[in-house]
Length: 256
Image (cartoon, rainbow, N blue to C red; front, side, top):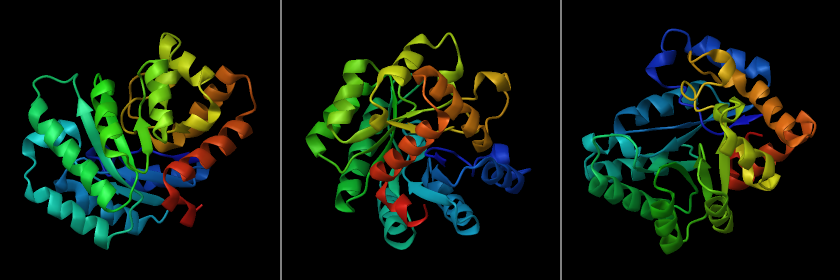
């Protein structure tokens, strides 16, 4: 299995990171995509991915961290993309949920990072929260390689627009909640070719963790939930979503 979105460098894992990683591998997670969120953790992500070869890095500045960003961070991002193994630019995007926020600054860094992704011919890992149409507008204008719309929770029409642009959609712990009717309907009905699996650990815990820290070893049970929603064998889900992840992030193929 491929966990296409996991913040294994987060402070929540400082006490037992090696054990969390080992548990994930034992559970059958063969690759873990670790996106950065700010220039300050570029180095931590790089070190983690050097230590654990099953971890693959994405570098970018998250929209919720733009308040501490500087324009010089864009050159630092280019340096990481030139000098470190990387599968995508990310986590980047727009967030229209968290208050307070600087929408102008979010938009500036989103567009600048899209330009860099195009410059390096890399896919992107997107954070899109209550900003789907605004993100789609920039993607149509920029015409990138594609990538992953992480933790997707837009409409079916918006999902179809991402798919047309060459993106796949990330689903994880949220689909395990019975009350998450919209996400579960999307996960059940979207073309399987458009879906990848993720945990977003330590966040978006599945219902059985009761709000406690999420971890990548939860991916098998999340996969089974998706299989149940689609009424297919879990092996079919794992095979398809792995292929989709590699298609979206082609550099994953080097380790798969």
